[in-house]
Every structure is written in C-alpha cells, then in structure tokens.
Amino acid sequence: MNKETRKCQNCKTEFIIEPEDFQFYEKMQVPPPTWCPECRLIRRLIWRNERTLYKRKCDAPGHGEEIISYLAPEKPFPVYDQKYWWSDAWDAIDYGQNYDWDKPFFAQFKELLNRVPHASMSTNYSTMVNSEYSNWSGSCKNCYLVTDADFVEDSAYCSSVYRSKDCYDCYMGEGNELCYDNFNINKCYRAVGSVNCHESNDIFFSKGLVGCSHCFGCINLRKKSYHIFNQPYSKEKYSEKLKELFDGSWKLFVGERKKAEEFWLRYPHKHLRGIHNVNSLGDYIYHTKNTAYGFFAKYTEDSKFVALIHSPAAKDCFDYTDWGDNAERLYECMGVGLGASNIKFSNLVFGDIKNSEYSYFSNGSSDLFGCAGLHKKQYCILNKQYTKEEYSAMIPKIKKHMDEMPYIDAKGRIYKYGEFMPPDLSAFAYNEAAAHEFYPLTKEFAREKGFAWRDEILREYKITKKTGDLPENIKDVPDTITNEIIECEHKGKCNQSCTTAFRIIAPEFQFLKKMGIPLPRLCPNCRHYEKFKYRNPLKFWHRACACEGKTSDKQQATGYKYENTAKHSHGEGNCPNEFETTYSPDSKEIVYCEECYQKETT
Image (cartoon, rainbow, N blue to C red; front, side, top):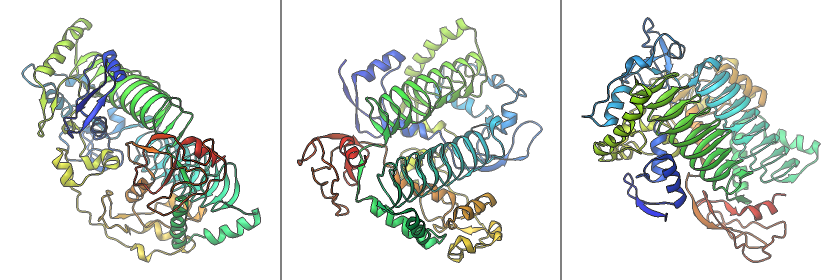
C-alpha cells in the first residue's frame, strides 16, 4: 500500500499516512485517522489533568465531607473519595444502560459518564502515604503536589519523577536524591538547577553531564570532577570558589543561573536527547527500538506517535500517551498500562485489561465497549452486562451505527468509529488539562477551536509577605516563614496557571536550609511552567549538522561559533549529516549530529 496525504479535519493541515501505518490500522481493525498526529495528541491530553486541584464535597452515600479532587465542584457527575470509590460498597454495573439506536454513540457515552461516580483523584490510593495532594501517582510517601510519579518519598512540587527521594521542584527524572529545580536528570545526587544530566552528583547549573561530580555551570562533560564553567580546579580551589558562587543568596542564585544558561549556548547540543535507541526517531527517548515520533518515551518497541511512556515496556502501540508497564497493541489511548492489551480509544484503563474500546477508568476487565468505572467485568456495553454471544453480535452493529449516525460536535467535527473520545466529553477544560502545558493557548483561541475553558475563580488571598520583602539569603529566613502567605512575582499576569500566592511548607524550608538554597519567588505552578524553556516543542524540523570541520557554523541568534576540540570523520569540510530534530531553525542552540556531538564530549 502506498503512502497517502490527507487533510486533518481539525486543523485543516495536510498529514501523511505511511504504508506501515496502514498495516497497523489493518491489524487493529480500525479505519485510518482523520486528525493529524499533533491534533490527535492534543485531543488525548485534554483528558489528563495533573495539577489543577479543588476542594469539593464527597458525594458517596453517608459522606459529604470536604475532599481534594482534580474534578471541579460544578461537574455534573458524583465524585467519591478514593477509598470509597475503590471499595466494594458500590458497583458501576448498576449504572448500565441499554444501547439507543436513535442516538449517536458518543451522546450515550456522555450520558453514562455524567451518571457514573468518578474517583476524586487518579492515583493508586492504596499505595499512597501522607500524599493526599498528589495526583496521577502511585507508591508515594510524604509527598506534596507531586504529579505523574511512582515510588517517590519526601518530595514536593515535582512532576514526571520516579524512584526518587528528597526532591523539590524537579520535572522529569528517575533515581534522584537531594535534588532541586532540575529538568530531565537521572540517577543524580545533590543536583541544583541542572538539565539533561545523568549519574552525577554535587552539580550546580550544569547541562548534559554524564558521570560527573562537583561541577558548576558546566556543559557536555564526561566523568569530570571539580570544574567551573568547564575549567578544571583543584579540590581546595573548587570548594573556595563554590562558596563565592553559591552562598544562599537569591541574587547570586539567579545571576549564576543566567550566566550558566548563556554559557551553555556556546557549546554544541545533540540533535536529540536520548540513549540506547535502535532505529528510532524522537526526543527524550531511551532504550527504544523501532519507535517513530516518540517523545518522553522509555522502553518502547515497534511503536509510533507515543509520548510520556515511562515504565517498561510498551510494544506495538500507535497514538499512545502515558504509562507503559507491559502494555501492547494499543491505539489512540491515554493513561493505559499495567498489562493492558488490545485496547482502543480508551482513557485510564489498566490492570491486565484486554480487548476493550471506548472505556474510561476501568481495570482488571476484558471485552468492554463504552464503559466507565468497571472493575473485573467482561462483556459489557455502556456498563450493561451481556453474554459473550450477545456482546459479539452487538459490537459490529454498534460500529456500523457509529458510521451511519456519527456524533458531530459544535465545531462540525465528525466522530465516526475510529475517533478518540471528543474533547467536549472530557471532564476538564483546556486550561486544566495537560494539553495547555504542551500546547498553550489563550482563552479566546481555545474557545475558537471548540475547547472548553474554565475561568479562574477570583482568589482573595491575604498576602502577608511581598516577594520583594523576602530575606535575600536563606540564612536570614526565620522559622516563621512557614506561616506567611507569599505573593507570587507574576501576580497572576502570566499564562502559567499562576495561583498568585503560595506558602513555604515546613519540609521544604528544612530542605532549602540544608541545601543552602534561597526562597523561591514564584508559586509552584509558575515554577513548573518556567522549566518548559528547557523542553523543545513536540514537533520536528529537518536540519543539517552545524559542524563545519574545525568549528561550528555561526549561531545567528547569539553570534557564537564553537571551536571543535577533536578531529571529525568528515574532515575539515561541512558535516554531510542531516536529521530530524525538535530544535527549530530559530533556536539559539548549536545543533550537531550524534557523531559530531560524541566527538566533542568523549
């Protein structure tokens, strides 16, 4: 079968369906997509709310107490606290409904979603200890506002972190301890303000380090110690200099970080972030094989258009976002894992679930179609129980009905069989969901695209401390700081879900004092969004290697020209290698192919 160019029914841009894509669709017995890959990813991310939390009433019978939830109070469906929702006190099968052949399938599915009780948070609550404000997480202990995390202890304000301890304000990482304000670091100890570093300890404001220790403001070093801005120091001189550069002062903290970020731009950057990949294309990909268009993905194989896969392994999956953990044969799924197999168009289904389509927050089941909240069930449609024979006979008829009577949303987008759940069925507005983090939109543009938007409730915090009045040095901060309500520097005037005010919690204050780190000036949400400057867009540009033999080409945005330190295989002429990269042609970084980059970092 030849490749085909089609027009996305959402954004109207053209996209290509390759022959191997058609083979996958045929194997999964689904029609080709009508939305482009980027729009499909956004559509899935609209169903994922990690960070926007509310206080609301528990609707479980005999309850009514206030609980923390990622579901806003005005939602039309009941919300149960985690313990009750996972208990045997109720059964979602009781909400089953007959299939109505006079209504589009998605209209009926929406009715079911609005009747079935929802869990207050998306966590494995039985493994969570003293971590009630953490979401999309499991096996966490003493954690506060930690999201998308597993096996994390004594940490706060982190996202996409795993098997870590004593970490604050970190985004993406695994196997870390005593780390602060980092992006994409792994197996690091005592790292501060660093990016893309691995197996390193006692590093500050550094980027791209592997196997290093005691480094400040460095980039691209391998197995080096006692370096400042890539220059070697004796152990004694390094210790003396570090006291001058990192003494708990806010102005020094901000100034040295800015200096380091400018220094990083003078050195080459590899065209992708990742290691141990075979025949794969993506960014932030690790240990993958035959994976195309993967972002933030680990241990994937024979897959395409995958993102946020952090647990081994995921195999034979297309348009799959979040999780892994021995998942296979998934298509157009969000938050699916833990042994899930042959799942299509579903969100938050897990626990050896198999052969299911269009299902939401169900586990340990098989052969579900259009179900929500089911546990250990089989042969159900819209939560109604059928025999195996009845189920097998109805499914083809429902798929035909979906094609003959499609759901049409307010923007005229048509949903036949083969489309993921429409955004207007999601419980989350665009600015509540992860879609806004990866693809930020203004309120006006989001609504123009037909996405819901939740207006911020006016916050009337009684600010007790302006950021300008905070002590300059952590050494001068009194213990009473944990009683203050601190104004965020952004004052809600950014597009970063600013909370306008924040507190310093007691464990955080002890951590900052221990590490010699000054008090933050932004609220946790703004601090989270600030790290996005280190993360490239989830799209590719075709570019040539910037190596010209003895030097790099001149970086137009900064004027820097890197002097190579080693001989490259292509000699003194331009490197002939071209590649797909998430560094846009307008980015400030000097971008090398992997071969040239490795020559400059070994």
